[in-house]
Image (cartoon, rainbow, N blue to C red; front, side, top):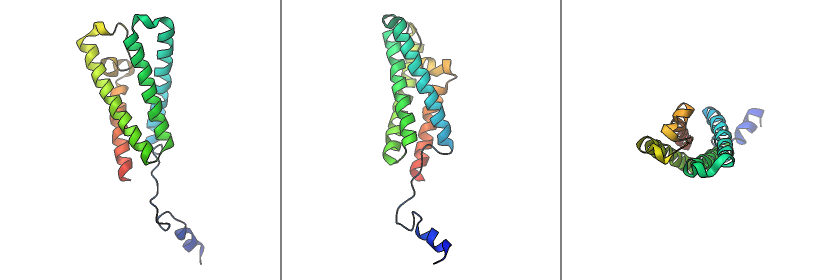
Amino acid sequence: MSDTDRHQDQSPAAAGTKPSFELGTGPGRVLVWFYGVFTVAAASRSVVEVIRGFDRAPLAYSLSAVAAVVYGFITYSLVRGGERARRAALVCCAAELLGVLVVGAWTLAEPSAFPDSTVWSDFGMGYLFIPVILPVTGMIWLRRAKRA
């Protein structure tokens, strides 16, 4: 048996298994980076806000903490990879987008409900609208990963 034949026999297709698609490769690395940065940013922001005066804007500060948890879970899922992680990340991206849209609309409709801003306020305007773009991009990547 030649070296070429041995290499072909050891391939995932020869073993009858489908090669796994790594979520954190290619464009997925950019998503991992952005979600990682946003995890740290939202977590840091919420910790500082809670320490400085949680009673001033508990809803806004709680939402910043929720955003940090969501971002962290999506980051973990993208790094972990696999179909189960892909589905979990897809659900979290959808929940994140829903949160950004609801909080964004709420902050515009009733600004008095948010005496201080959140990561998702005004659809993420304070973060260059990345909070509204990121979940859409993530869902596109995760849907593409399913087909691969």
